[in-house]
Length: 156
Image (cartoon, rainbow, N blue to C red):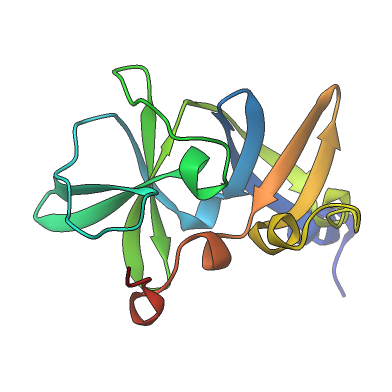
């Protein structure tokens, strides 16, 4: 039988919080491999508009996704203040361009509320839930949807 401390530990979810524009978002810490400063990416022809290009991360070629553009919040103009969150998604490494990383926090799984039905279908698909903490609303990003897997890449 589990103790109350063990139950509360298994109920917790660790999240990395960050800003995209003026908005607060987060992802599960288990998806994060590294957080690094912005370095210019090598542009790829015919890449989707939200893919800024690729970087060489210790011998691994990593695509960089402008998370603001991917979430339909407008394109970012990356500068030295931006941060790239390197994630492992769908068996691939992907960098997410964000404005800044805010915090690492533990929240109860029950604190994650579903996206309101009044939101668009696309918003509900890209956001797995919303967390209200103090005066902030954190949106939990569903990386499986936001980052297409290798077999699902858009051709355009």
